[in-house]
Image (cartoon, rainbow, N blue to C red; front, side, top):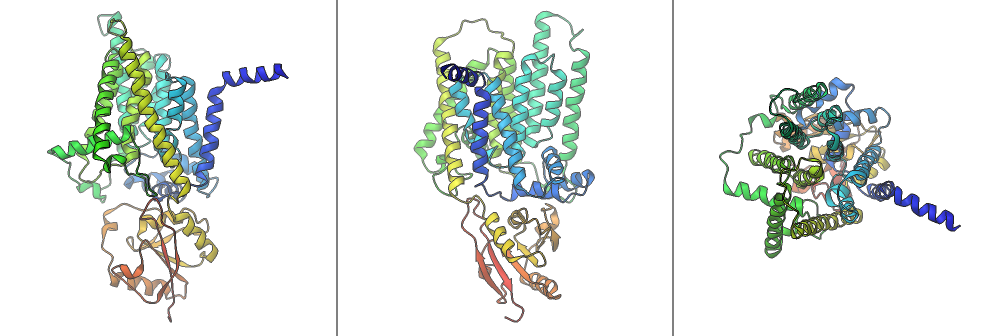
Length: 517
């Protein structure tokens, strides 16, 4: 018996990476059962589900502002099932792979890895919430692992960068940063040993450069908005103002220390907004941390380049897009990924400073990393707990009510369209709603100029007359009481009010139309 126990202990010690990953998966699997998906999660699912082929898929992606790797994966999944719950399972599998790589190959100690495992982004934002950002995290982690033997893995790295650039705009910016970092490291390595450009790259490295650049070009093509997109007429935010810089700085601060407010609608909030004293403390902590990281990374040029360049290029994007895009916590989280990847590849980069290690700096670095990772873990556990206790969106609850009504032959008007589409993702027997903004049937939202038109009472009445003329049961879904909206029809009477939700504009009111009311 003791022999078996000892062997079991030895086995667990050797395979603790798998053990922690399995534990992470089980907890995440449990949590997604309580996470109600919101419209952005459902939007990707509906695009994938309702695209008849790959050509129509990429046509439908034109207005999304992101390349289509995540949508392509979902397209394959929707050929097997129309149950959106399987998207959540797939996403947790992806995030679990990231955690396994983190434990198996990252340079952090076990305490730091444990804190990262349950950190805000890796445990909650990029795991429980099913978006393309979890895929970006996995690919960045794979890159960091392959970077150690980059010459041997040059083709693998190229394909990872190709895929990363197709996850989302922030994945594209990170892929560009990682690509240039690899080139810089190759240049430094070569010129330490040689004095000319001859033999700088091998044949495989030239091929890998072509593959990476092809990924950037094809991603940019997908990112280019169509002529009828509102983005086309959006002006670049320039010249910049001081408050623009402050805005980006404060959101970067939140990415490093993403502790939300302790309230049910916590998502996107920050404790920094409610306490000036706490904000000052966190600003000082951030500045001290930044200086410590710079002092540590500067001994290896490629590592400090990745940290500074990726942070600068992300900041530049946010600053120039402030006219139409303010960004959210999930977007600014790539600043934290920038730091993490720079620390990860540090030991694989060429050392140019021969100074002896300073014990004080090493201890201060380790202490700073522990503090930041602890804050991340605390924020992740708080976020997951609130998500478990409170409905993230009331779309699932509303969809369940509609299922009990058997609305397969009913006409359903959704106003507004984006929150309404979240409900549709849970209805397998209903393929479309009538969207007032679109003035027609639809499932996913097409973000074009036509959608921006104002909905008035006349438009609403004409729609009701048209849809009820064939004797169809007519249902209205809205995000606010009908008597508070610009249009009102007493023939609609309320039959359902959902619970409040973390996403506060995804609370729903359902009205049934009685023609002879």
